[in-house]
Image 1 (cartoon, rainbow, N blue to C red):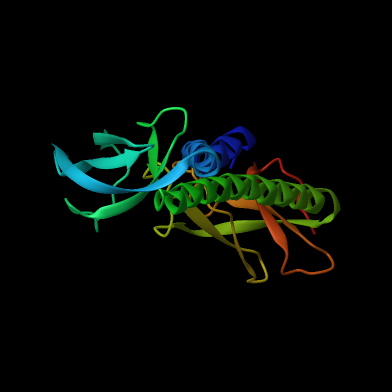
Image 2 (cartoon, rainbow, N blue to C red):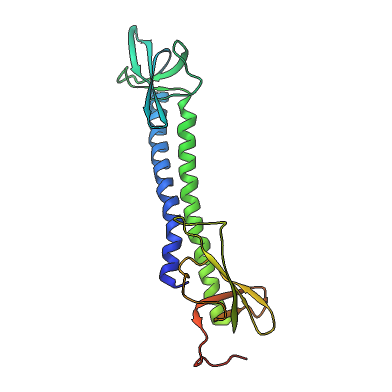
Length: 232
C-alpha cells in the first residue's frame, strides 16, 4: 500500500472514533457539569410526572416528560424534565434537583448516571482513536527498521484474497499471500488501494528480521522487474 493512501485509510477509522468520541464526551461532560451544579447548589425535591408526550419521527420515538412539584412554598406545574426512562409513567414520583437561581431549571436525580456513561464512552472512544494511531506509528517504525536492517528477498504473489472480516466505508481490504523460492509463505497487511495494481505471479519485496524470520514486512511498493538486481 502506498504511503499516502495508507495514512488516509488509517485516518478514516481514527477520525470516526475521534468524532464520535468528541460528541459523546462533549454531551456527557457538559450535562454532567450542569448536573453537579444542580446537585451541589440546588435543592432536592420530589416531583410528580404530569405528562409524557411521544414524538414520532419515522420509526424513532422520543419522549418529553413534564412534572409538577413544590419548591420554597410555591407550586410549579408542567415543567419540562429533559430526561426520560422506560420505567416512567404519569403520576409516578421522581426525585429532582431544583436550581436555586431558577426554580424551573431542574434535572432528574437518576440522570446523573446516564451523563456519566456518556462522558466515559466519549473518553474511551477518543483514547481508542489515539491507541490506533500509536499502534500504527509503532508498526511503521517496525517496517522502517526491517527495510534498513532486515534481509530483503523477492517472493511471488500466489493468491489475492478479500478480507470480509473488516471494512472501511463498506470497502473490504485484500490480503496477499506470497511464496519464495524455498516454499516459505508470507502474508501482507490488509490493503485497501490494491485493486488492479498487481496480479498472481507478481514478485514483491519482503524484508525479513534476521534474528526472527517469523517477523517480516511485505513491501507492496517494491516490485521486481527485469531490471531489478537478483537477490541471493
